[in-house]
Image (cartoon, rainbow over all chains, first blue to last red):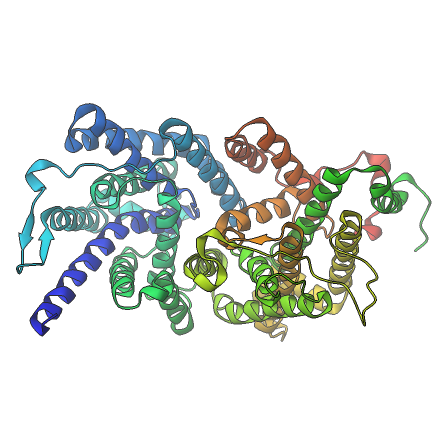
Length: 294
Length: 324
């Protein structure tokens, strides 16, 4: 490999890392929001990612179009989020973390088995939509698939939208206020239950949407939810719980660390992100942007 | 403190007699099943030291279980048995050491960070074992011979014998139970209790709470290593799943189902959950579905766990005897 090719190779890996990071952000931001605002630790968050991927897969099989599949599946996941909040999660707000962990752990088992019953245990692929199914040639041997660039752009747009929603709208203002002091928000006459329901559904939809758009590059397989859940935990621990900014930087950091770990140190690749987390815990136990809280 | 002879005070002795006499009536399957339950009970009791006594919800306790199990694998010669008297302390020591290293990191965080960080570290072990060829990789590895209990060429018992194994597991479970009760009655246990209720207050009373938590974490890790060692010895097989989050979740479920807090609670939880698993797995391949639903319902309906289901008034012990 010539030196210019090595530089290019590095560049490609950096792009991959950023793309992975942006995707992880969609999952981690929901996790951190749900915790920061509702005080609920949701282990089943990875299952929503998995659910999104499987919905995209099955609807794309039926309709033949990934876009149509996403269009149908996103509202479904919002409804699911609302239903789960109403049936289960609202009973958890006042409970100890211990019970939140357990209930959502039970929920993972249920989702995994339903997935196994409905879709089987095989690995599935989802076709990249035709007009994005080409690569940009960089040299004679290296090229970069356009879908990955598209993926990054979509994630960035969603992240931007989330930023605007939270910083610039009335709803965002109440969300931020709810994260700081829920009693105060409630006594100001804002329906905190409704706020929680919206935040939860938003988190579910974000995670599921990530699963849908990632399906063509990451494929659809059992256990995909737990993999992403644990990485998202690492991101939230690194970024600081409840901090969207922290989740964003943490996601990019983890995406890059994981990608470069796979390439340059494949023997210990599985461990790179955890070492990073250990380092952050040593340096700033409450995460990069976190305030010390329990 | 005089104790009246009542049904409730006789219950522990009756249970003890039944446990000792059990091999006389049980077949091979039930002996192995109960040995397995007792191993899980040790594991669950060790986690309860963190969850129920110190208030540290760890979702990565399987890490130390796995270290204990893999320690036996590494210390066993390929086809010959290893010495029980060497490998058992070594496995417990290795798990305690791992708990020390991880504890130093994760105990810097608290609450929900602690939950996530413990899970992530256990997952680190999982991925390492999954990729490491010298540990058997994702397929796991067999331990062909059970540890040898011979001491100066006299073997007081043989682990390969199901009845002997049962008694060893029973003895170690009883020892773990006794150790934990002693610890919790000692001033050390009082401090842990204080940390669980209000760590800030304990700190302002002058206790170095970090050190207490670390010692608690290391003891719990060592005991989990003991359980992992026994598990590997019983089944003669280890794989990365031993480190997995499902293992951590199951044992946490045992602790809570049994009722976190009471020392004997996790034993009840282990019995209930292993039996439930056994029944469900017999009935359907998708047994995790009813298991998951059961867990969800248990959380919603049983805030105090099985130990929180109070006996009828006549059997209830008087308050001074209810100390942990």
